[in-house]
Image (tube, rainbow, N blue to C red; front, side, top):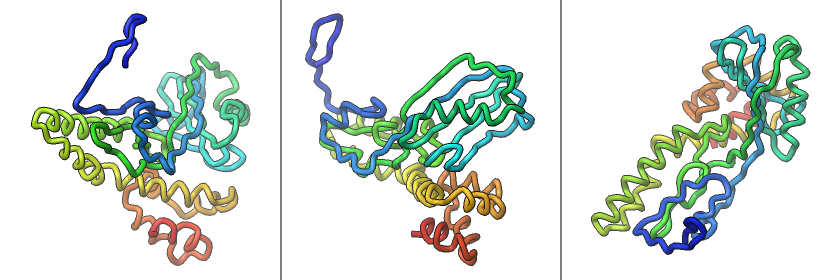
Length: 256
C-alpha cells in the first residue's frame, strides 16, 4: 500500500528493488538476513576561509584520539572551501569534529562553517543475502559501500544497474530465476573489493595510535589507496609478512 495525497493505493509489481538506504524498509519487511550490517554516524561541514596547503589531495586522519574506530577527512574544493567531516563508532561525531577543527588552527583559525550535513553510513560490508523471490536490495540498503572509505556512489550505481536490468528481463520474460544472477554479476566489479576493504578496516581499527604511526612509516600512498579501495590486498599484505609487529596484526588478517 502506498499513500498518495492522503489516500492509500494498492500497487503490485512483478519485481521490487529495495534501494531505500540505511534501515531499508524493503529489506526489513521482506525479511532479509542483515547479519553483519553496521552503520556509523558521520558529520560533515562545508567550510570557507580555510588555509589548506595541498589543495590537490584528500586528507585523512586516523587514531583513537582523533576519531575512535573511524577517521576524519578534509576534501579541499579550492578557493578556501573544503568539506571537513568525521565518522566515529559509538561516539558523538559532532563533538569530535569540532575538536578536530580546533586542533588545526593553521587551517581553520579563520574558517567559517556554512553548511552542516550528516548521515549514517554502512561500513560493515555487504550483506550475504541480496535476493529473495520477487525482491532484491541494492546500495546502502545492502551495505554495498567500501567500508574503509565510506564511499558508495559507484558501487551502488553498479548494483542498481545490474539488478534493474535483470529485473526488467525477469518480468518481461516471466523468468524470475534470472535475479539469481545479480549477486554473481556484482561480485567481480565490487563484491570482492567491499570484502577486501572490510578486512583492511578490521585490521587497521585494531591498531593502537602508536602502531598506526609505525605503520605510516612503512606504508606508501599507493598502499593506502589500494587498502581503502579493496584492491591488490595480497600485494600490500606481503610487505608486512616479515615485519615483527605487522605480520600477525595485518598480514595474516589481510590474507585470511
